[in-house]
Image (tube, one colour):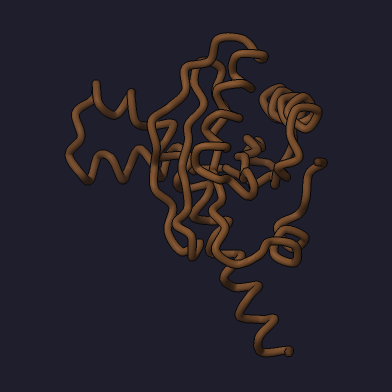
Length: 162
């Protein structure tokens, strides 16, 4: 399946379906999962990147095991809103994944998600070594939580209009 906007996802996603958050790095893929009510994002262990075919297989295994209804993937825009090489790499990854799965992808602006994740880990007094292991999944969790909050707002707006 192709990519959807968050609004399109809100219209097509049935109740009781979990969503995964992804923070695509050059060496790892940070993972997070929502609960079935889509209120909370929880970090999951990172996937170590090998090459695309193996990365895709690991991600699809994770999606099957967790019954993922959609992926929200961080789009690493520059602070001025322009798209750099990491944005192009993320879009290419999603294009390649869409040939392997019908699970929809939603791009989510991830500016400052890593900074927020780092701050949260520092506040929890996580050691530097542990922070390095957990930062990508924490960032995926921030990305996913932002999308979940938006979905919640869209659902509230729809119930007021309806």
